Image 1 (cartoon, rainbow, N blue to C red):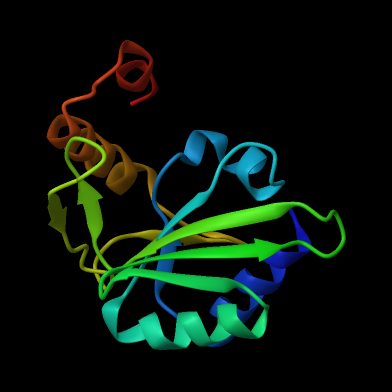
Image 2 (image 1 turned 120 degrees about the horizontal axis):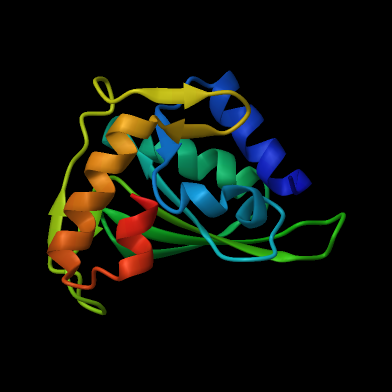
Length: 147
């Protein structure tokens, strides 16, 4: 795992910020090493400002898309890899690029597995991804096999 991610998740845990990685869990190891894609994180609305404060302290550049959605860009100082976090207080779904649908997760009720990186539990992940894929109208055979 890149140091920038380790530092972020250590601070999130220390500050008891309710959030989790909720997408692409089957590729999480590669994403955490900065070799594949971004991290999709949903954060409890009440904890958003604290999450952004922590990220700013780690020199993430923050781009506000809306009051519900942010992109965070960072540079891991050890590996010199750039990273991106897709941060939201809601789960966005629907056909790209608009993704016109969204819904909130009750962050106090979903199960979060919190080892080093907080991730959505497998049962909640499966249900959520099935809903997102159906709303996005882009079910691919490989996605359905994964689920």
